[in-house]
Length: 406
Image 1 (cartoon, rainbow, N blue to C red):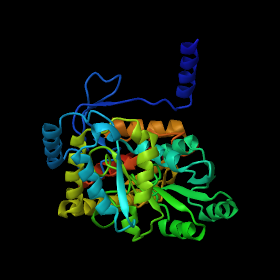
Image 2 (cartoon, rainbow, N blue to C red):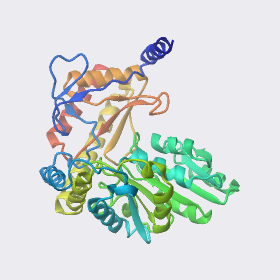
Image 3 (cartoon, rainbow, N blue to C red):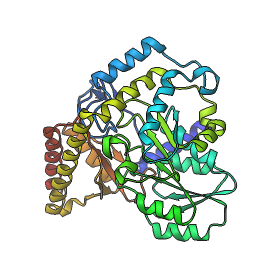
Image 4 (tube, rainbow, N blue to C red):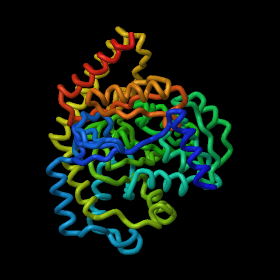
């Protein structure tokens, strides 16, 4: 029976330390949230280092007011897909504003908005990855890019993470007329960054295009938070960039920015755009408010605070690891808000997460298949909403646990 089969599969997952569980939060997105698990009688309020709210904007009063204002004007929903009657002036204003943001990096840039980053990436790879194309994908790309490549009709070649020598060999041997290099800009579980200047040079040398997932760079990196391309100071029509609006921007949704002809093609053929109800206009209205805040003085202050947290955590945590090598931890090579503390074994990662939870800290263990086997970790996510005391609290807890392991 199906139930028996699935139940056995669930038991096997649990035995391997791969079982996932949900926690229900009862307060707004913030470093301290009331959260309960399936066995908790009373919700607790741990200090969390697991959110993608990198600038701490998800509960910003100005965005909450903008969302309410948008709902009062536009109502709760859009009522239809973008191509029927669901594309509002709020959506159009958001796309126009994002196109202005991306214009320095992408000539003739236009933007198409999506309900989620997952849907945007599926759209990109299935609409552009036709039978005459080859997709060259970094092996540590996000699951949405992996799934998009699986659904595409194109040939798919994967190259070792960040290995541009291997990628160039693949490009040199490629015989298809269309070549698309597909990569995260900031890798979601490692926090390291793709070498965008070198990738662009490869694309120009081998007449390829670059599909970039800037989910964890947009809003955080570059002048005014304009993302990874702005940080690198690059400009090319070969860039096709996806950015999300539910991480640093603090709201919801995603967008694709590219040359106007590519956007026109997506509008005609991207199934996850054509065949779904448009996101509520109120969300687009709130994102416009978020973008203005990100580009202004407050956004600059928040990015500076985030950089200070990153530098402090990395320096002190590496000193701790060097002092207590018996703990067996490794700090990943990341200069972004994503700081991977690699433990290795699934059970050890779960145990470390549980030990931190007992000390009032919430950092879930990340295990395969999200990360490669043998690299289970705690993915520490820093936010501008964290205080210096919050970072010190995390460091003190980790220091205590490192000492216990020696």
